[in-house]
Image (cartoon, rainbow, N blue to C red; front, top):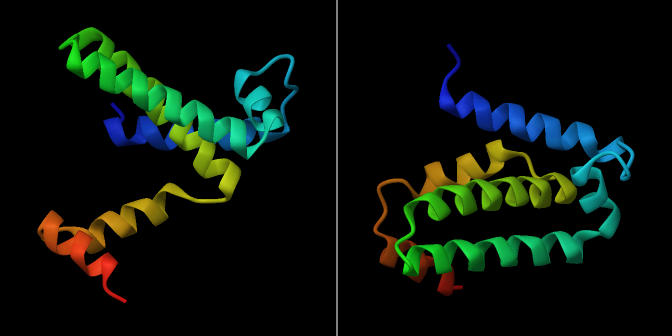
Length: 109
């Protein structure tokens, strides 16, 4: 049985593979064809939909919208040439830090 994180890895690989697919046969390819601004807009829309589901305390919608948001984030990363390992590394750097301390360190400089 594969781990749940492997599902995310497979999803990202599929999203990357769809960069060269026909936009008429692949929603992911269609997103790539619309460009970075539209992809970013979709990430924002899904984030808002997730936030609204949370406010409504709609558990099923929170799950569904979270999946939609993760998918669109992965499309944005792939379009920008960002590998999930880079995000994981950034999270690892922040592990054990207070969120307030980490945010303050970004504002210094």
